[in-house]
Length: 546
Image (tube, rainbow, N blue to C red; front, side):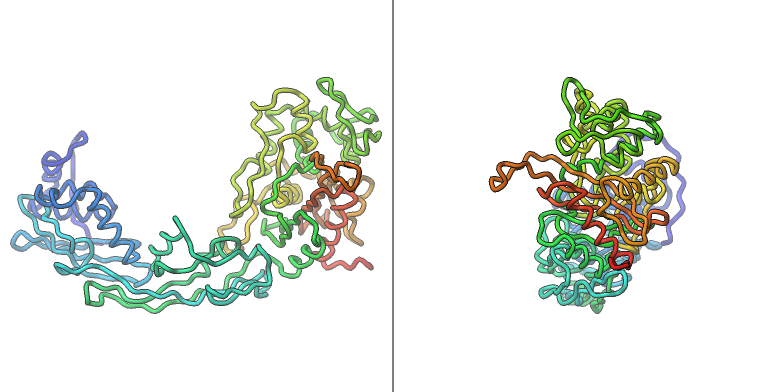
């Protein structure tokens, strides 16, 4: 873009109308050229109110500021304009001609000109000035079609979703999402990109997450009245790879079966979501003692505890007059901090949480992704109350063992496992391997992550998570059993707890982090741990017979 160099030295207040034009006069050149240059400068930056201020009083009577803006914006939408560049202008008989180049998404790069009539250093405006090469009485229109929708693949190139927009086929379940009639911002965005107004688009799941990559580029004709200004052919996008692994996706679904819950698997080195099953994205529930991973990290970081710190062997702890029991109605446990973690002692971690305090516990949880906007579209946010909302040590102690108002999705819990496995650096979960490499955010130091990791290994080798073991592979894990107060009439009103398990493996060189949630199923070590083992075996290529 060639622009006339100008020098402006002045101090101005906010001025409109004649005063505004007087300021422009100081820039040099003829009055007509100056106002035309200013008009196209404002057009380039989308300053429509400033453009309107340059019109003659008669033109301003004919079109208001808002309507002028709407006319230019609609022309830009119709042409799929992405950038506008003005060239060297020329003047003849009070008409300033300005060459205009426009970059469009659907029709490529176009060039033309606008002829700006100038009267007493004001623009005499008419509707054809909204786009280059429009003649008086012509309207800018288009007729476009969309290409075939591209396929979605797993990370190895296996087809996950394919077919025309109105007849998509998938080997995935609800995760694939649906293609339908868009609305709101998505519908407007599609039109701006050149798609027909009745275009179908991804409205949920992977179809929505990868909409821009798989929709392709529409093509057709851009017209000025009956004249064709530009033509283009629809361009189909290339098939898009995801971070998913179809084999592991199937294995996770089989391991979960028809039980209500969710399974999430994350690549510990890159943060990619490798597999999901059930309600791993949307079901936010109390995570039970799996949250002790975060509590342990906070305790070690703050100096409240060391791995060797000794605690009384007890069946409960009293906080604010309330007896906080261990599992199995107050089973005795305690000893070292490592053993208390491996045996999941509420009698230890409740008071430890209270000593850590609400402010630090919440801060560390947020570093692990809690209270953060999910990086995966459609995931429910995992939340913990603000520190100011805790009213007692008991509130903090209950949260420290994964109860209270703490809510997490299986994917968010798997992300916590990924963070510990990755030396304390968190990578926001993602499905797109081609997306900009996510910045690793340090949640805790490598030393603290290593200590927590060793404690998680003890859970599987000598604690409550033995059923998560994988033959020939070191597994780090944590059981969770969340009391939710639901009961079953068939079992004499026995409370049915949520079963959780968090794991990563191999513990010495992590590849996969897994979180398992099974609703109202009992103890996490009994129910969820075997599912985690089955998924890890499938993901690591280990046979249960080994």
